[in-house]
Length: 471
Image 1 (tube, rainbow, N blue to C red):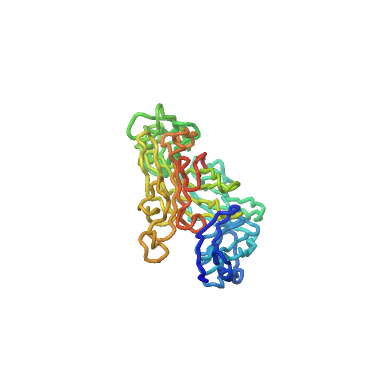
Image 2: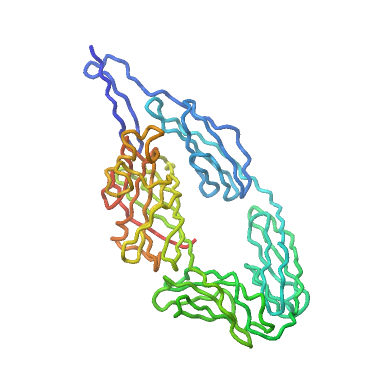
């Protein structure tokens, strides 16, 4: 009797992707052929210091490549393919190793390894070299704590100088010796540092009174209110021999101004701040000085997007990431983050997306910005990453071979950024522009990638929300 071999490539059962082999059509007189078992084993536990890194290594008995994930994402992160671990806070870092199997080997049972993040509770503070400080001028002192925690500055000679506690901007108000203190109070992991001090001699320039120099260190970010900008700066090193009386922010191109007595200065824009850069001018009793070099408006944002997945409930596909908006140039850069694979877990496997390779205008003041797992846009069989793809991965039917064009297992996420006000809620039409495609292991059904867009993803997934916020 002839025995027929039938391969069922994949079946989705209770949120898992299973590969099975069935034999014995009709009579069932042949033994079932099953994939070989494999096991995972972690190597020695490395030392993981707080604010440091370490590398874990797990091996498969089948010799197949292992992937890593963090089960304690608030304590530590890990690179999926290399096992490089970064400690984020004190605590116990729990890591998982997985191997999805192939045609010859069944998926391995997940292995775990825990690393206690080591903390030396003692910390010290070290000042950088003291800056030059002239009468009525401003300079910046710098100090760092060995813990990496922020240092707070003060002055023990307030009659000679003042200092901005969180930035270290020192202003001389009289001739003499200016003494700056640096403190770090500690936290749950670190003891308070011993206070250190730095002394700076305030010099009196022998020059005729003049207008002040331009401020330095000018930076601009989006303000807390819509259509506003927050401009920070350091006062001029040379005040012109007279006390600084105020500062004026001017836009480039011209048309927007705001005034204040110190940094930062909030600048309201009559219509929009998009397309403008901002400079700062200092004034004294003699005159107003030259403007600084204009600073572009650069702002970092976080983003979270969710796709409802009817066939993998309670798991949805979720993207968590960050990006930078240049409001002056009207551009978005450095979109990166992680995409969950709803068919895995719990906990769900995440795919790192770190290559922003596309930003397309919608013609209405918004950008469709896309980041990829691989350094190529080729994700689907047709090439590129068109959302309406049928979902076969790039290189099909030869993508299992290392030489396949475009690599193996690319994934992407497309978000929508409204340049004039990124944090404003999106309309339903804008949410429908979101899309993802996941062709990495665990996010595929045989040769078909998991996708989500406008309700027509390969498993019915569709976008339901996107929330952009400031860090």
